[in-house]
Length: 160
Image (tube, rainbow, N blue to C red; front, side):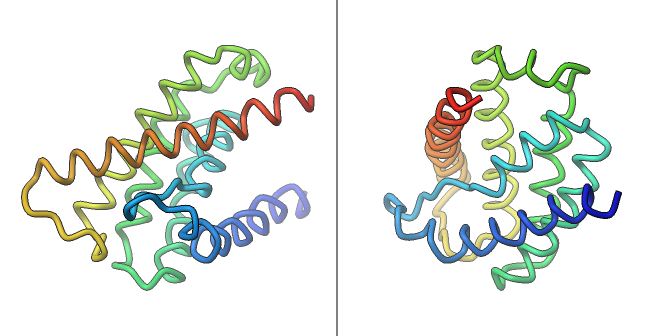
């Protein structure tokens, strides 16, 4: 039981470090994919919205504390995205993974919610001139995260 709980937390600590150290190296005009969000979305798909939301809350706190941003903005953004992803959870996890349309739409919508709420609440790096800039930043970040997630998804699916 302890191993079942500790492995996702340890993996998420590694992903937080990757997100803050390695992923900015592949940014395009300040837009980066969020690997921690991708992991949390698939975690919520597998375990449901309640477990995924609680897990996302704690991981969001770790991300906020590690990134030096506003405490609470990442927690809120990860929690909303994981809650939405949890609605698509089914008893058979592989059945969900076979439907690529659902995966694409889920990642796009959840990523957009994450990036929009995170950029509005606490992103000090993105200086936006108006509210439409937040919207555009969120759309492009969600697209980049979705493309990154699909590459991971296709690689992982062929491996199974």
